[in-house]
Length: 321
Image 1 (cartoon, rainbow, N blue to C red):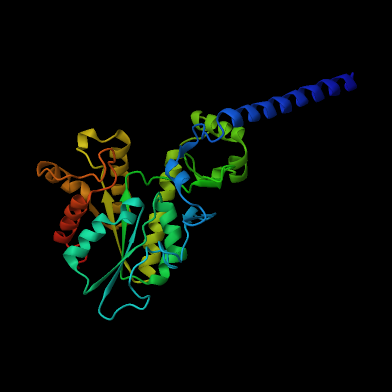
Image 2 (cartoon, helix red, strand yellow; image 1 turned 120 degrees about the vertical axis):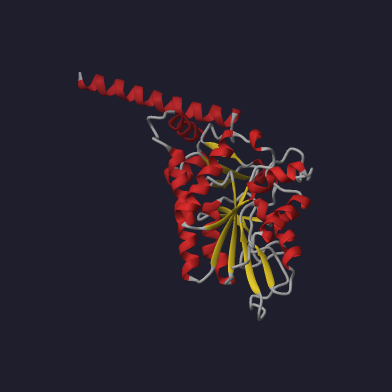
């Protein structure tokens, strides 16, 4: 009797294993790169040269390659400044994602404040979020020893560290998960479609993961608090600029409205100096300013809008006391 039971159990176990292998094979053939609801895939990252421009890094998921014609060894976009600060100059480090990296508002500030008394170090990285930005500052930007750090927070920055790997086509795969990175086995995520499907199902079941969004928000809060502490110990002033969605408020998505409310509360709770660029949207719309760099892009300001934002910050004494 026991032998029969063991034989049946072995057959059932073998059947389950076979079914899993077949399911994995089918998913690899039909949906090899799908996130299966675990998060979103950054398609832009598949088009870049991973050898020249990007490196996979456990602390950030990915980061730019440093010491080339794009980024210097300190994690800032290549500039003409020496690491030895010019006497009498106020050194500024700008942190953020692609909005910062593309530098429209920074160039506007340069026009208003000039070059004589300021150095403008752009440490923005395409597709970074706050968690990545703080780690990047700690490891690479800190030796710049700025007088001010200006962090631009975008409304989509409530994200965790991405999962990153190179697929069989030698393309960089970047997934921004809907659950904290600490809950994910990177090896299985990279090598198993079935594991990604399993995670997607867990996320879909509210009883399985209580509130993943709250956990990611807690990571953002902790990152902002850590950055404030590091800069305070180094005697550096932190300012956060909140970048809005570049369209009338009534056309914002529900997620954008919630994100603005949440980041304002975090900054107020932590006592961090901040400027909300939402405050100039209505005026820009009434004046007919072309706000977007691309008609379908509500994230990245045009040259004129970058100058418009800079004027607002200048008038409100961004670098004043």
